[in-house]
Amino acid sequence: MNDTTTINKEQAARREAGALLPPVDVIEDAAGITLYADLPGVSKENLHLHIEADTLNIEAELDLKLPEGMESTHAEVSQPRYRRSFTLSRELDADKVSAEFEQGVLRLRIPKAEHALPRKIAIAVT
Amino acid sequence: MLYRTPFPRDFLSELERLQSEMRQNFDLSPSIRGFARGGFPALNVGSTPQSVEIYAFAPGIDPASIDVQLEKGVLTLAGERKSILPPPDAKATAHIDERFSGRFRRVVSLPDDIDANAVTAKYRDGVLHISIQRQAATLPRRINIQ
Image (cartoon, rainbow over all chains, first blue to last red; front, side, top):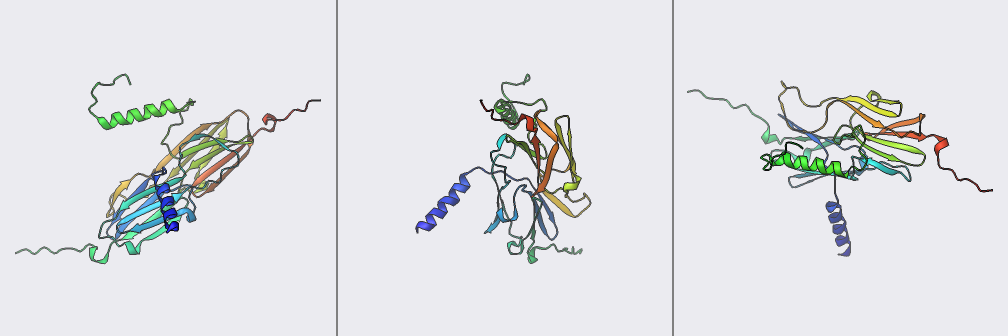
């Protein structure tokens, strides 16, 4: 009981703390959707992807390994974490998501469900 | 700023103007090069007694293609990031297009006491980290009293 409340508190604290909104590109083709997100400074271990019901959550923590005693004089990246979520639509197959993460760029591929793939509809002329 | 109307029609652009005005007021030591925010790559600059540290957030770029030059106390980063958007004739639609693509160039003016020969640059997880040592002569030294 106690354990779960501390975990919930931690989660709540993390949610309340500010986060950066990573820029994304979303491209749709006939077979699915590809999402690219810029997450510089994040290592693979600190990237968390969750799909809950129809919501895709991207959360990541920055780890720059700053030298000891460094004083920041100018900061455009001012938060230590990224967060962004998207609502998926029903025709996407959330079970078949694949992800690649390289040089700070996340590439997420969400295929369309079998039944939602495009079909050519024949027009009957009478 | 001179052409402000008492009843702005475009509320959003007015908000944007307010935001940038506030940002300017908070910038305590504006540089002549402006340090334009929102440029690519985003920059963080920090300093230690021994060095000046610059972090450029440039994800998805081949580190070999980034041109880093240090000349007369001015550091220039230049390069190009290719667009991944589908060509117009492809059967694909871009729903969101926020990531930077194209050529970039950013300039940072550095303090006077840096040693232009002691520079290291590392690229990791999409961040280019440039570390420039300060000249040994200008390091704070303790003076012994005889």
